[in-house]
Image: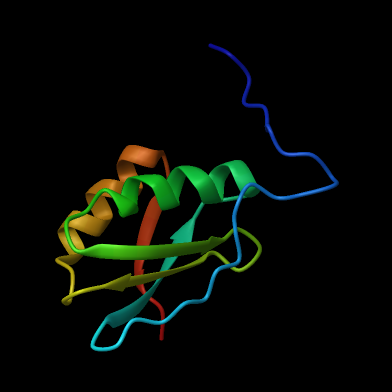
Length: 95
């Protein structure tokens, strides 16, 4: 089994810091464990971004928080499956 390695460098991160807000959109923040770097953030963001209705995802490894903006509330089971597919664990919605 190959050892995990990061594609990220000390000079930068693999995510963008976009914070555009859609009118009428639903924003939900989830807590995800196991993310340690920008590569992790990208993997989680890409999988959640595939869920129908999702317009943006911002994952932050340092806090373990993933903020998702969607057209309507998301089914938590779908979010959990996406996070699992990326190789991480969804703890639940952040308080």
